[in-house]
Image (cartoon, rainbow over the protein chains, first blue to last red):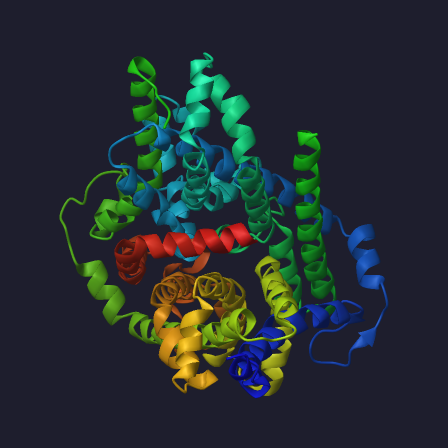
Length: 293
Length: 278
C-alpha cells in the first residue's frame, strides 16, 4: 500500500498542473509587482530603475494617495459595521424565530450571488435624483423630502453611498457564519445561566459573545480584508469622483496603471494594498486577543 | 434557542421582516422594472408597477445587443475554468492528503496563502505578461487567472473531505491490484461527489460574475463576458437605458439564481468555507 502511494512520479503528475497555474497566476505576479515598483515604466519604452522613488512619492508628495487611503478607512468602517453588526443582529433574530428559518437564510443570502456590475447599476437607480430614485422617493413619502439629493454626486454623501452596496450584498454571508456560531453553543450552558436568573441581554453579553468571539474575529478580519480590496462597485458607480471623494486605493491604483499607464507607480500601490491587508489582519488579531486578557 | 416572549417577540418579527425586505426587495424590483415601458421610467414613482407589462426590453437587449455573444463567452469561460479547477484541485489535494509526500504540508500552506491575496496585485504583471505572449483579448486570459485564484479554496475543500476517507478502503483497492492512478480515478474522485458539487457551484457563481479580469484583459467586443457586457447600456453622459439594463440583468442573473435555489446549501457552505479560511 505504502509503496503504491509513495509513487513519486504520480505525485508529481497530480500536483504539477495545480502548482504551475497557481505559481504563474498568483504567486509569481506578486514578486513581479514588487520588482516593477522600483521602476518608472509606461509599458512601452525602456524600464527605468528608480529605486524607492515610487514609494517616496507615494508616502511623501502624493495627496491623492493619502486621500484614497483615508477614504478607504471610512469605506472599510462602513462595510465592516454593516456586515458584522447587521449580520450579527439578523443572526440573533434568526435564533429566536421558529418558522421559516431556512427560507429566511436562503433569501437573505441572495444578493451575494449577483454580479457587482448589476448591483452597481441597481444602486445607481436607488440613489438617482432625476428621475427620482427609490431612496429619494421613500424619503419624500415619509416627509423627509428635504433630505433628498443626488447622493452619488453629493460631496458629503458620495463616499457613504458607494460603501453601502458592498456592505449590503454580503450581510447574508456574515449572518450565516454568525448564526452557525450561535446555534453551536450547547443548550445546557444557556439553561444554567437562565436558572441563575440571567436576562436575555446579560446572557448574550457575558455568555454568548465570549463563546462566539473566535468566529466574530474571523468575520471582522474577512470583512476588513474584503473591503480593503473593494473595487468593482465604486469603480463602476463613480470611478472615484466627484473630484476624488470616492477614490479608494484600488481604484487609484487601477487608474494609475491602466489609464495613466504608470505601471511602476501602480505596482508600488498594489504592493501597498497587500501589506496593508496583512497589517490589518495582524492588528485585528492583536486587538481582539488583548481584550480577552 | 433564545426564549423571548410577547412584546419583544413582535418587535423582533417586525425588524427581521423589515431587514428581509431591504435585502430582497431591490432584486424583485429589478425584475419587475424590466417589464416597464419607456414612459414608466419617467414617472415620479419608481416603486410603481408597470402600467402595462411589456417584453420589449427583453426583445431589444436580445436582438440589438451582443448579449448572445457575451452569454456564450461566459459559458465557455465558466465551463473550462471549472473543469480545470475540479481536476487540478482534486488531484493536488489527493497528493497532499493521501499520498506519502514529504512536502505535503508546505505545499498546502503555500496554496492556502492564496486565499488572502487581493486580486489587484496581480493585474499589472499579468496584463504585461499576457500582452507579451499575445493572449490579451482572448478567453484564455480570463480562464488562467481564475483557475489560479480558485485553486486555494477548492484544494482546501477537497483536502478536508479526503481526511474522512479511511485508508483501509484504499488498502483494499491496492490489494485488488489497483495502481495509484486507479485508486484516484476509480475510487477517490467518484467518492468526492458532494465536494465536487460544492466546488462547482461556488466557482460557477464567482466565475460568472467576475469583473476585474474581464474589464482589464478584454477590450474586444467579441471576447467580452456578461459582467462587462452589462455596462453597454450606460450611454454617454451617464444616461442609462434602464429598461434594457434591467432586462439584461434579469436574463443574465437567471442562471446563477437557478443554481443557487437548487444547490443553496452547497453554495453557502462553499462560500463560508472560503470566507472563514481567509
